[in-house]
Image (cartoon, rainbow, N blue to C red; front, side, top):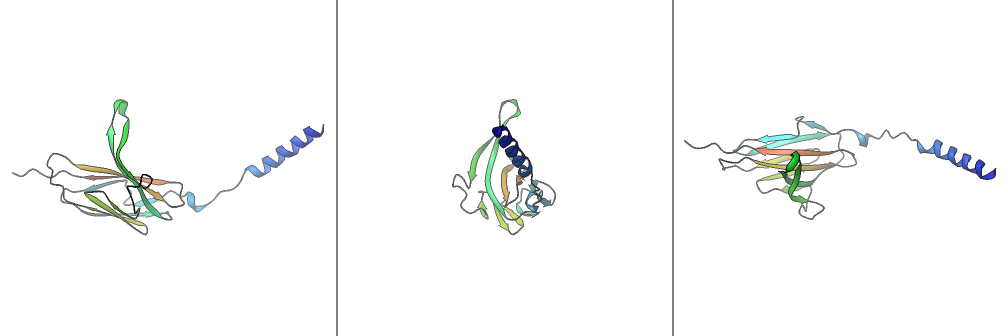
Length: 149
């Protein structure tokens, strides 16, 4: 009988301590301005600024390409990340034809001119938002150059 009483008391203790109220502001969804995860740049290049509110600290954690496979699946390719050591400074990232600089709650993308008349360029940029449980996955796309007449 004692063991049943002990199990009942243990169950009551678990029931009353298992539920908590986590109303942390850390769980707010980051808000983008402009409100779009696709960042388009003309072939001539230039700069684009993305402002992120509801984030404690922005860090670029990975940049990569995507390759389409069978059954509409995609695979990350040419991965450069903090975890594999190819991104040394998550606040200043050099992606070859573009750079991304984190300045407080802003990410400034600077893109060089695309002279290729056959291919546009694109990269996927993954951003952590500090203590926030949400991250951002951005798609940077640059138009191909116009053909000369």
